[in-house]
Length: 114
Length: 114
Image (cartoon, rainbow over all chains, first blue to last red; front, side, top):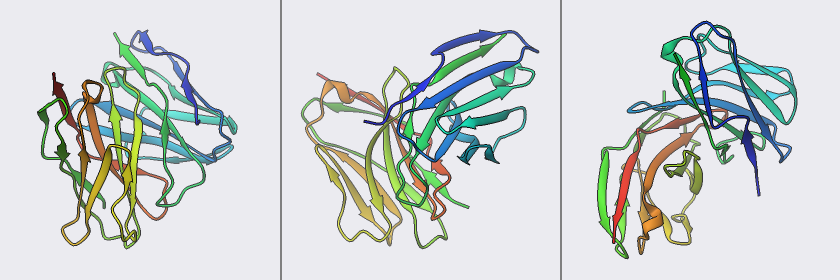
């Protein structure tokens, strides 16, 4: 079974702090994704990566950056957290792309920025 | 641009009955995939079922079936013999030929009554 893990289920940070969200997958998947989920807005793609050290912006990259130094690990970074970044963050991975490629999700991190 | 619409924000279903969750989509891509995910209150997105745009038969996975009507651009999920554990949010999503992004609908909350 595919397993995607995220470093924290719940996280509380203060405005202006630098925040790291970590995601690890154990299935040798090429692609990894970061989404945020807000009520009424569904899931929106922040960034994705199709290979080590490669990244592409999604629909809402502003205020975020990412890092992929190893194939199995994809980090989301909030350089200076703001209250409007309070949200549920979901990481996903998939084998190698294509319309039939299923994305598998981690358990999510509920981030609150005070 | 791709768009997914789920018009039912919430619904009740009696245990052991079937329920249909509506999903319509819009895309100009000839090749795409349609996915359904379940999100329990724990937050994890669980993959349920996949339908490819060129698949001739409707997909089925256990108690889940996908009613794919390409001309109407609909991909409704049918859950047969509902169980209490089916209470969750359900999301319809679409991939493109590039496969690097899923576009999600707003979700439908299902509550199964005993």
